Image (cartoon, rainbow, N blue to C red):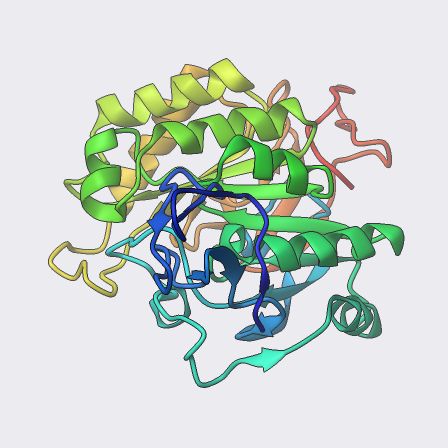
Length: 335
């Protein structure tokens, strides 16, 4: 569905500049931005994917992944098409690298999304699978309605968004998992078509705004896996807050990045040790299928707080107000 977009500037003639993300695409009449879903039509910027849904499902919150937010809950997840990055290893490339011509789209009103989520007994709504930034107008409208209904909202995002639109949607977000895909600008430019600094700024802003933040770092052999890079990343996270949960995940060959092998488990174990040594309090490993690295432990006394095995989650060592039952430390968890 085509609607007038937010966050753009009119330029000379019929040119416009999109202000949604750091690409700041300058578009001639008829041109579409990097995201494939924002188009200059007659000197005005329109979003082409308003209400267009490519996927919907009820997921465990841990699948986002969010481990310290509403553990063991189920969340209604939706996505559209398009993305403002071009990650060569995208696991959802069928929808992220498609536009409104994608053949399996269905149109929904914001009210219908909230109604469906409630009918399925979900406490919240997640914008996920593809990049929610480029669904800004629709996700904003859905989030406003969801909050009125007492539901929580989640963004699973690459964090590639400008500050003004982020602050706008951030007022209605409860939790985010933000991909920090590497800790060098070289990786971002070569592998994603973006840059690192705006992503780091989004993490900092989200934390400042009181949004529950967790980070995912996919470790890709030879591209972003050096101990020095992992240590610098962990030190930066600690500078924002040592309480931010970090998920180091294994890479598997995908899309246009099939010349690299799957990440050896030893490398994610190494990343775990580095991050813990730096002082991060909640570090998890993904795609290793080792429950001990998916469970949550008290950073003060080591007590098992939340036990996980695949998507089976049990809260075992937390008080109702989020403290360790053994030592009383307040845990960075939203129950």
